[in-house]
Structures are given as C-alpha cells and as structure tokens.
Image 1: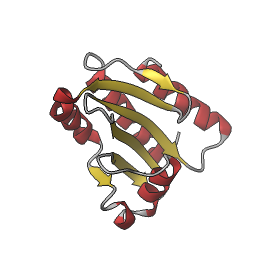
Image 2: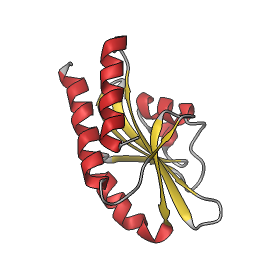
Image 3: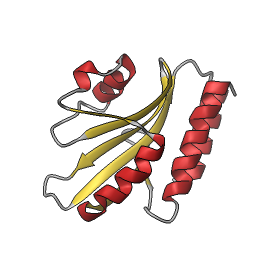
Image 4: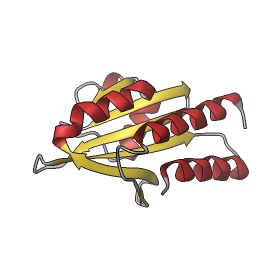
Length: 139
C-alpha cells in the first residue's frame, strides 16, 4: 500500500480506536460509511475526538471556498445543509478521510458518517482498505 494510502489507513485506525468505547457503529450502505448516532448533549465530546484526526471543517457557509476534494465529497453526500458539517483530513488532492456531521431535524440527536476516499487505487488496494476500515469500526 502506498504511503498516502497507509496514512489514510492509520487515520481510520486512530478514529476507530478513539471511538471504540464511545459510540456504537453500523454500516450505512447508502453512502458506504460507518454510521453512529448520539444525543446532542455529547456534541462537544464527539467533536473533540473527531478534531484530533480531522482538522478541516466545512459547512454550508464556506464549502464553496473549500478545496476541490471537500467540495466533491460534499456534492457526493448530496450537499451540506445549514447546521451540517463536513470534517476532512486530506492526504493529497484526491485522498482523504471524511466525516459527515448531520444533526437531526428534531434537535435530539446527531448522526456522523465516516469513510475513506482514495482515488487511483486498484481493486485489490481498494478492497484491502475497505476491509481494514470496516474491521476497525466493526461494521
């Protein structure tokens, strides 16, 4: 696995380890992400953990000024609405780990979706990365 892809894998491993006793994860087949939900009173705790690995944060007010990678992820997710966030750690122009931060409309919970994005991988590399990712989050 290339250095960049190993860095992506290490970031995912760190996130999975940080969240192992904090959140319960399930697979979101629609977006191909690990999905967790938590009450809004845990907002600061979860943001702190995410911020240790995903330093760049974009929302509906500034996504237009974000790098092309963040804009592409936002578009792929269907856009970033007011109150939502996209947290990203980019490793190169088209490789990152992202988290979609989506508060529920009723204000009681927040959903987060985490996944890697690595363009340019062959099928074997992509399969290996996704297996490692899913194993780490137990999804």
